[in-house]
Figure 1 (cartoon, helix red, strand yellow):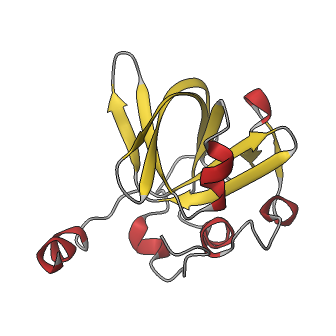
Figure 2 (tube, rainbow, N blue to C red):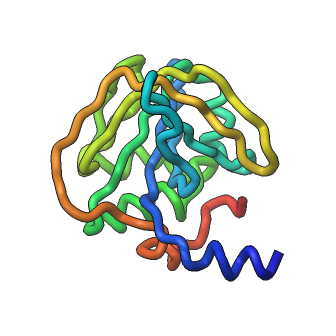
Amino acid sequence: MEQFDSFSSLLDYPVYVVTAAVGEERAGCLVGFAGQCSLQPPRFTVWISKANRTYAVASRSRVLAVHLLPARRHDLAELFGGRTGDEVDKFAATAWEPGPGGVPVLAGAMAWFVGRVLDRADWGDHVGFLLDPLDTVTTLHGRALTFHDVKDIDAGHAA
């Protein structure tokens, strides 16, 4: 395990905020495990910790929104990664609007997409959600917030 930790500590990849909604219940969290997994048809997978409140909502949601944050938006990463929805209404602390399927879409993201959940895969302490992109918006260009940028954030829920 220690040898793999030395390998993975060298990696730097984008982090995302994933949001979900079921009825009036909303949730969102910072996600480090995610990526495009198919070109044709286009598919994207996000992995959400089972310890996270967002997992409970996402597991009942038909769609999820995946937000790519600009490097300057550490505050959004802190809100969605360092606070737990069990104690705080994250959506009261930031601007957002309902997107397709009622899922929250955050203001301040450099890009986002809403994807229909096609499948879920339980492979340990995280569950993968396979998404079929339905709607995509890009508002900014530049450097995205990465894993190394958010290493200082203590998780709201330890994964």
